[in-house]
Figure 1: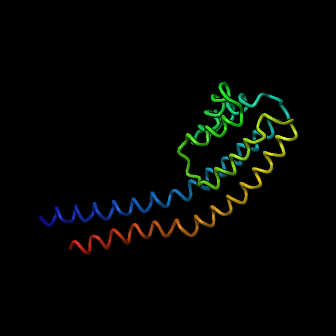
Figure 2 (figure 1 turned 90 degrees about the vertical axis):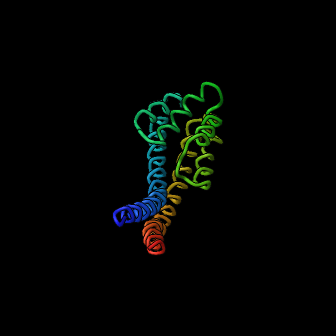
Figure 3 (figure 1 turned 90 degrees about the horizontal axis):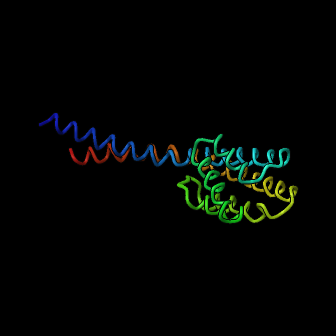
Length: 169
């Protein structure tokens, strides 16, 4: 009987600890995804400036090089560009993926769609650079939030697990 209690208490403790760890991972995933978006936009800017390839081909190439949710965004946008404009495809791609970014991050990325495929080369490059500078701010904000909240959620999960086990004893 005692062995069963120990197993149940261990399960409760480990479950609540894992929930805390999973919640804390959201913050580090957000930082990583924002950095990946920034890198992808740098690749996009370079490709537009020096190769002159069409946007759908560039997006397809970026999606092939990035194996994450960010790659999926570019893949969906590339596919959607066959049906709708580049800006609409970009917004659709941002809305259909399960990203760890928040609404403010998503709105900054959606601002890119306003001129995507609608202006000349320099206009698109300046829009990409503007979006990148906003992403820099969001990355630093996300890192501060990560430093503040990641440890808190991890500790909260462990403390909650210990508390439940002690109450049940």
